[in-house]
Length: 295
Image (cartoon, rainbow, N blue to C red):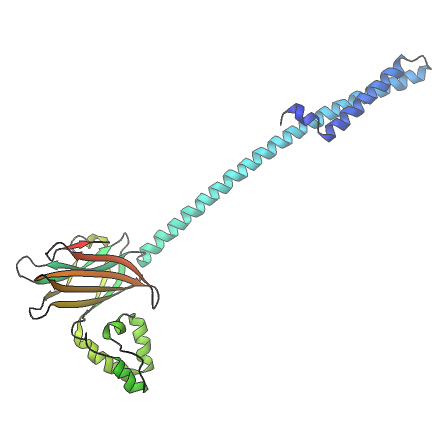
């Protein structure tokens, strides 16, 4: 809004109108032929009108200056608010980086099946890291699910509680976190001991690895070496990986297709009893045991 536009607001119009009236009456009084004192009054009125007019102009000028300063302050506040928002975003990212460096963040590790170049149907499970942060306090369990694939733990629950609802497989039991299993063990130690005697015959590895960094993701850490069975057409493993940043579960299946072994594998991070986040998916390349990452 320019000076002329401001000039016609209600305050300015009032002051200017008053000044014009003073000038008008003063001029009329000055040219009249009344007594001498009337002329002095007229001259005073003329002076008053000039003062009022000047006050109106000065008020308008100050108003424009105040408006300009207010606009400048508003712009400064807006810039400051934007700077604060950027600083908050930077702090949030920094806190995320610090938390990731301390806990492992969204990094994870998994078993990568690597076939032997010298022996047929022989593979190694290499623990492989994925992510930008190290993983701490890594502990891994590897199970041969094929050994207990026909075991029904529901019968054991029925013996201890007097009822059963459905077949309860070892895979279902192991699909829960180690913390959950330990909690149930405290509630019924006798039953849990009986279950673990059955399950532990299929446990291949129960090992603390420690810290895993992204430096090992090229070759991985060899965790277990095994031979695919010549008398079966399938072989199944499961791995349970515990770390400071969470619990991960991997399923690895081998199956004979057209006379050749094929492999599929999924790694998930359970976030509830029924919901998992898929982190990694592996499969065989063509008709070989060479593995490729699908996801």
